[in-house]
Amino acid sequence: MSKPKLIKFEEYRNFPNTFDIEDTSNKGRWAQIFGNDNPIVVELACGKGDYSVGLARMNPNINYIGVDIKSNRMWTGAKAALDSNLQNVRFLRTHIDHITEFFATGEVSEIWITFADPQPHKPRKRLSSYKFLNLYRQIAHAKALVNVKTDSDLFYESTLAQAKQDGLEIITTINNVYQLLPVPAFLQIQTYYEKMWLGMGRTIKYCQFVLGDCVSEPLEEEEDNSRVSFTLNPKL
Image 1 (tube, rainbow, N blue to C red):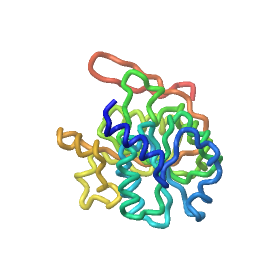
Image 2 (tube, rainbow, N blue to C red):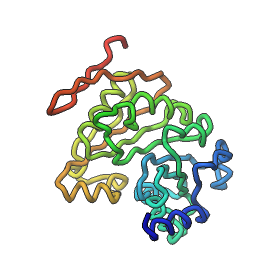
Image 3 (tube, helix red, strand yellow):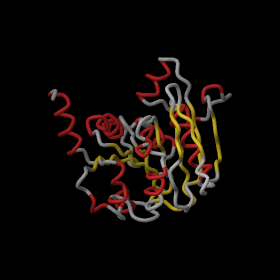
Image 4 (cartoon, helix red, strand yellow):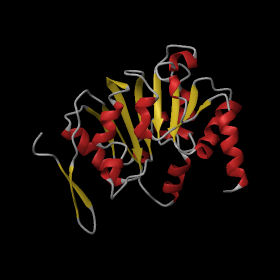
């Protein structure tokens, strides 16, 4: 392991705006940690934390928590937040399938999923799959918004297919963010990975839907050698 990475691991653990995988005692206490009762928004698979920091700058009356398992990546966002004296953003290192250990029922008001791994061969591991939506319902209220920004057609289409199967209210679908005139400010934030995908000529997509209080079931997926298609579960 490289020395710079080891240094970032240690600095992350000692930053005042970061939390690690053992900090489960914060469940239900995030308002106390932030020192206010403002809404709490989580960014899942936040990487370097670009979106959490960008949204925190735009919305000082909303609290943001970036969540990822790689603390050396989140170090970038945590350091930027400290350098800018942003008091409304924190970072949490954990596996996202353990998210219910860190937030109480209804503690989260909105969710962002930014450039998550599309998991082409492991649909259950997609962060917008039925498995994860059911986890999110344990920490966020039924009217919570879920925002997805991605370069992946697979992730985008499967997210919308799951939302439609669940009968969720889909508020916005945009299959090419940068064709909008103008591009809304909250979609102009570009993560490290988004810049990389844009440099490769990929199209950026965005959707927003209401989380709801149903119990999601898996999509039926059929694969061939060239694409993945989605069939809504006929039992629902």
